[in-house]
Amino acid sequence: MAFTKPELKSNIQEFFKNKTIFITGGTGFLGKLIVNKLIRSCPQIKRIYLLVRDKKGKSAHERLEDIFNLPIFQDIEPSKLQRIIALSGDCSQAQLGLSENDLNTLVKEVNVIFHSAATVRFDERLDIAIGINVIGAREIVKLAHKMENLVSYLHVSTAFSNCHIKHIEEKFYNLPYSYEKLIHLYKTKSWNILEKMKPFLLGPMPNTYVMTKAAAEQLVKHEAKGLPITIFRPAIVIATANEPLPGWIDNLYGPTGIVTGVMTGIIKALPCELNAVTDLIPADLTVNALIAASWDTNVRHIADCKLISKYKDDPCVYNFISSSENPLTWKIFSEILMSCIMKRPTIKAMWYPTLIMNSSIFLHKFTVLILHYLPAFLLDLVFIVSGKKLRLVDQYKKIERFTDILEFFSTQEWKFSNENVQHLWGTMGKGDQVLFPFDIKQMNWVDYLDTYHKGIMTFLLKEGTETLPAAKKRHRKLFICHMIFKGAVYVGLIMLIWMIIKRIFLAW
Image (cartoon, rainbow, N blue to C red; front, side, top):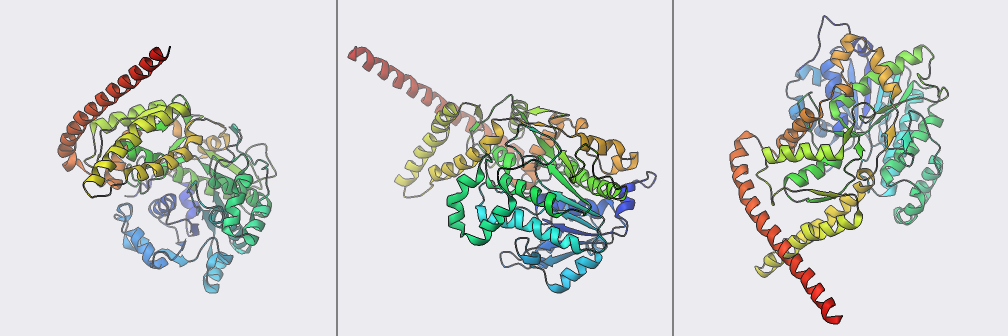
């Protein structure tokens, strides 16, 4: 459904009128929402080109058709969808892997770029991360320099690209390595050599994702001079709050994978500093801010005003985060979601949902041993005796690797500055604030997290109200099993402590 209100003037709609857009990462979660919002809320947009890889035997065109079949595109008129065109290519390839004809089309027609393509896996192989996140950024910049009618270019980074610094402002930071050095290694070393070098190359960075995103920012700073370009740094993007569908989510990355694991009873322990402030942001607010920043990039470029802030020699940077204006702690986050899980359990639950979070790594590992590995080992044993293979222990090893990767972000907190984002919101007219809302201060976390939980139930677990009675019945049975197991663990621990005391006493 369209949010256009004819009585309200929109500078952003006017900016995108008759514009041709080029989007990378359009098949990703954020990219799909950018495409969706533009085609819904900017009705006079001329055309959208998407860079799409051929993947798993499907052509770029077939993958675009798959996107159109998603629920968020079901109410959009076919005539509007015809304005969206897939171009076969690959960010990590020279000239983006595009044909000469497609390159010429982009050079002559494109007015606005949204570069959101990235590998977001934290544990991605270093060569793959460099290829997509750094080489891809360079190829986009090279293409942008050739474009004849470019008026705005948004490079999507991450708020954690400089997470080795505790106070992150809307500016560029010097890194302990050069992006040119990374590119040189990528071109001259094999992937297995790069993996061996990874601990040294990462330096203070926790993973290849943030490392390569930081390197891409440095590349933009040095190689995009003269372009109407802006760096947009969103924090942890999760499900939509309102549009195009409340709670829409299509992936299990980051907190969503953890929440889903807790809902199904699989994850019961997490490393986390409960009182630390997290930085979660709804996807639709992120997209609205990104589109508004694209408009503002053109406004500033025309005015020859490189930056709102004091860092006048670099492209403008927007930190789109929640902590500075509407802070949410992990404790409140977990309490609200556990309340939602108990109110609306999933029928797919394997065990009764419980969650213990420890900032102490020792206590966390002990809890994992008792609540994850012990029942997994016992069930694996039962299945082995019965001639089947469940291999729950192997599954928990994968879960532990995943939670260990997230530990860096769940046990620390950062201070962010977002004056540029606040200024952007303040300069927008009433019409644009209605059409493209992103004021995080207005976010009600209780309502939003309830929507988030419903979204996971609906779009990931594929459950609705019709499964709720059966889910609650299963929930009660799992609770009885949970109490029996809990009692057995307590009895076992008491007996173990008693045996230890007895041995000490006898030895004494």
